[in-house]
Length: 314
Image 1 (cartoon, rainbow, N blue to C red):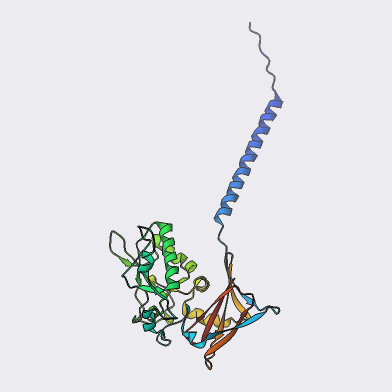
Image 2 (cartoon, rainbow, N blue to C red):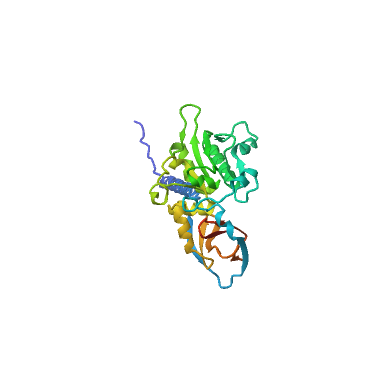
């Protein structure tokens, strides 16, 4: 008869194995937590945009600067309509001697690109814009091409001194068309991949010129291509108007509430802008105003009505 074996249970080994399992579980949980945290940190990289009033510092030093009062009718923030006509010298624009529009054709900018594939096209040889606007548009359209791989954008409307839509007389308003290789062309709409353009317009200084539900501010004849017409106003102004969902007309009224003593402060990521309004001195050829003495760079635009908007870049 076979002898029965006695098996001795090794509780120490069981406890050791159990301890190892616990350690592995802890390591897995910790690793997942770290990965989730890292993923969250990587996707949360957009700094919030904020607006506030920056009251004057009693210890702040200021300096006096002057601008010709006639410049009231020039700049990126002028409002042009039946009541406030554009006063640009169209012959000077054509001759290249204008101080209001530094005209450049879009084709000349495209020709300067050393690439066989252009990121966008222009409707004809002569369509163009003020140079600052053209450069901003070029950066905007090129970024869209790099983001989507689509190069069927076409600039079909630019500076036009005889335009029925008076805003095109500023040289800062554009109409965008889509011209695909296959299919019919059409005016831009913020749909599909093309929604990127409107979503990022403010980053390049553009606003939708005739947004919905703002009809009270626009001429009743402006009904076509509303989703395809954009206006260059500069980055800080575009950010403010877009985030506040207001049009240019509303902005020019709101900015009058801000002075040197209580400037509008716009913070976007690591950039800060200050803006304020100055009434034009209609009794003199020169309007004198003050700016902070420690300013890095500033711009002044007329509103084509009654004053100037100062933008300080810091």
